[in-house]
Length: 432
Image (tube, rainbow, N blue to C red; front, top):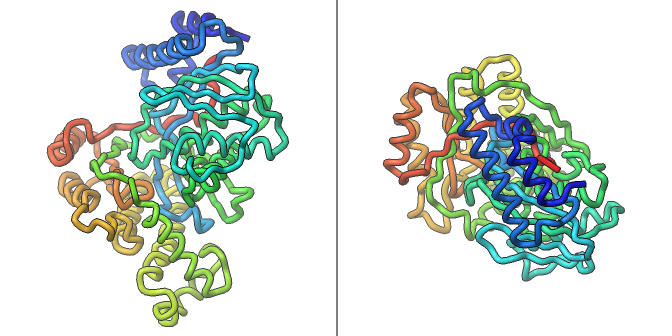
């Protein structure tokens, strides 16, 4: 069991360099490894400054952001998705504190303090980090584990409002800390993902599916089938994106996800209305042939947008599986074609690239249009994540990267085009 000083010394001596290089998919560049080590050292030093360097059992934890690769808004209908963890994460140094309090000092924010003696949902905490911590703790306690408090200092490279799911990264981070200190690391990555979803649904107040948490917790590129959400089928897709000749870019359009909960909820509500017409709760349980045969009646019962959104579900559910198969077969051209088709379906059928609440703000469609011009028939581009605002995703040929990046940042501003990598590991203990 290390104290904070011992952990800090080991990090500075390079003891954990191999773990850091593997975690962030570093390509052997010494400068990048130095940056990863410096950040880890900074995180532990921040902990020591806040709580003291003698804290026993200090460890370093990571919860990565995730990128949705295929299956846009399919998970909440028990469909299939393709997603991956990325090399942007939430990093925390934490140690048990021997109390019933959880204290988390996130860089740039006030200290968060949660009592483990009060784990009931609180209306006033909805849409806050406190809700996520309380919800994760409550679910772990419900599973029969004895909770104890810890102190933590955290910082994040996950872009806020980026569609990389900073909330899932935070849930994964907190879940791994509890798992290590209170559960003897008995919770696997899928269990931690489910705990995170519970916290977000019940405590945070967001009716999300499970994809965000699975992408963050499990790691690498994974195909997930949510036909049975209690026991999802998770398959790692071993494809080396660095050998594809393309670079993964996430472009921040500068538009905010704030006040879009109703837009997200409407997608779930309208797909649910269609499935309810057939006496089912989720579209995955309604055969597509029955749905298509009933479209004339559904127009009267549910409205045209609900039908279009359901059409998107069926097509993107298929595409997510086809994308995984294309990657496993090494057919990246086929994969790109499917990504482009998914993007068009999201725009035309799912209709999640802009909000009807603010029709003047159409940053995502504008960014998609400019990106298509810059790609000029190469690569692929689509809305990223929940949509309505936020980011787009592009797979850019290496020889067009400079042109693409400069073109997007001329439109949106410097630093808006982010080059990411699929990271091989999900939520984890990095060092102890």
